[in-house]
Amino acid sequence: MTSKQRVVVIGGGLAGLRLAARLGGDAEVTVLGEEPHIPYNRVLLAEVLAGRYAPEVIALPAPGPVLRRGVRAVRVDRADRTVHCDDGAALGYDTLVLATGSNPVLPPLRGLFEPGGRELPNGVHAFRTMDDCLALSATVRPGVRAVVIGGGLLGVSAARALAARGAQVVLAQQSERLMERQLDAAASALLATHLTELGIEIHTECRVRGLTTTSAAPHPASGEGARKVTGAELADGYRLDAEVVVLACGVRPRTGLAQAAGLEVRKGIVVDDRLRTGDPRVHAIGDCAEHAGQVYGLAGAALEQADALAATLTGSSAQYTGTRALTRLTLGGAADPFDLAAFGETTPRPGDDVVRLADATRGTYRTVVVRGDRLVGGVLLGELSTVGALARGWADDEDLNSLFHLLTDDGGH
Image (cartoon, rainbow, N blue to C red; front, side, top):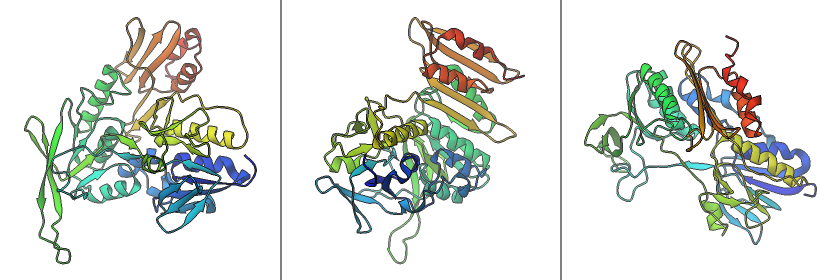
């Protein structure tokens, strides 16, 4: 890339800002951030909801004048190489980067929307943005009845944060165990025990089919009544009382701009090993990008893709070959921490070996899946002093003999 080419980045999250920082003065960069807030680390929103961090604590490093906050891109004209924005601006580009992230999945629940409407009832919240977090924080008080729908990483984090604020929390998970994508059955059971000890009521193999609401008196100006959630109805007919409902049912890549611009979209915006779409002047990174059939949806992958694209745009011939993702989660504060990490394939295939170590006294659990002489995945709970080295060995395909001592390392105890 020649110096001072115009690079427009749509998306002011981790991926977009990392790319802008890596390009530095090598390009004339403009980042369009739809949210009005100072950029923040979305991974830490649960800590804000729990009251452990103020919003400003999770702010990302300021990118300076390259970021335009509160501006939404509404159309990409690839023929003219122009991005049109909702404030009327039209930005020309030499290189366009789509870092549009993802949207929360809103499940098809009866009562979620009125016919023809798109307004959620009062008390019903997604948990994806700072606005979601602040709105939830404003409604949560000790004793409030809250139902979290979804027992994945996001749902578990939200439930733990609400419990830390004193809410009476019910966690409803449709599949048979919590965080099934990351944890094996034994680790998931330990997680469920931890959450139960915090007062969280857990229902697995439980499908929420609808919400019950009540309507307030019509607003004097609009004539419209404000609906408020009162409960969640389960498929078996049981009803959970709820003043707050959190929708944590996963996320979906934001691909609308790319589709409207005629770019290939499958699960995400399809990119090659140089993170290019079918248009060589348009790239995609982060939660919206699909590389080699994979949409990662994880911060680590977003950062690696931003770094790889920055190298490409500044003349490197290196290619992005995918991310070996590590999921790490800390639940609770200093008084009751619960640390877990998972990487690779945590469910063994036929013929795989499994090494498992558990120490009920220390509250630690470690299991790894071995295929031949290679480590292919693992789950660690409690003592995580060795997880970084194990994950690096897994990512680098090191021989198992060089990693085995890390399994039995007691973290210095």
